[in-house]
Image 1 (tube, rainbow, N blue to C red):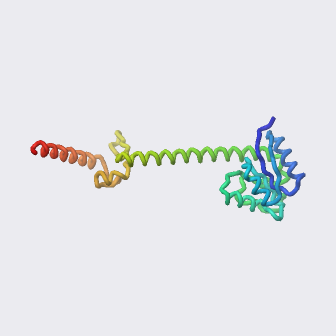
Image 2: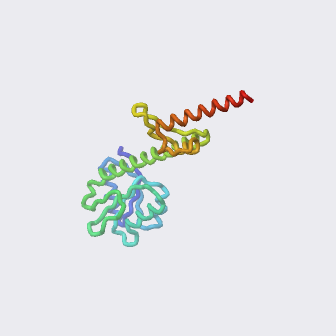
Image 3: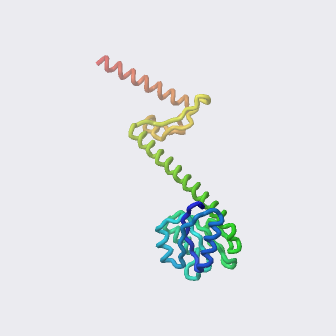
Length: 202
């Protein structure tokens, strides 16, 4: 039993589509596939979210380039493998390009394309998780009226200070250094003690 995969084939010739499927099976896949040769059927099949699309540029009424443009317009990140007969230009933004006489490589190329797609998807998920975490962190800091910072004890330098330091001290993050921060703390303590003495005197 091969590796299950959902494939949409954009091909005007049924025999050529059968040959592509045969090569995928030889490459270790068990494809569930559909063939389309016009834009309307193509758009309908996109609703099934195939794992990959294999397109031949030999359909005059519906080119592989047009198929890719429709993918981009719908913001679908489905890898597209372009199969040419040798005369037509390669479709722009296709993930891979093979000639009909190179179909023996179709299985290995599909495997590479799917792995690249999986890695890209995982990277997007990680980036989105980091973005959400950073947003939550910023909101938490903002609601707590706190200023985040990083201090390097070896160098005695503040490697990061949040922008809220301006509202707290009147200085920007770039202006803050160890000596200035100590002076700010000292002044704050002295002001606090003075306020305490005034309260006792009252």
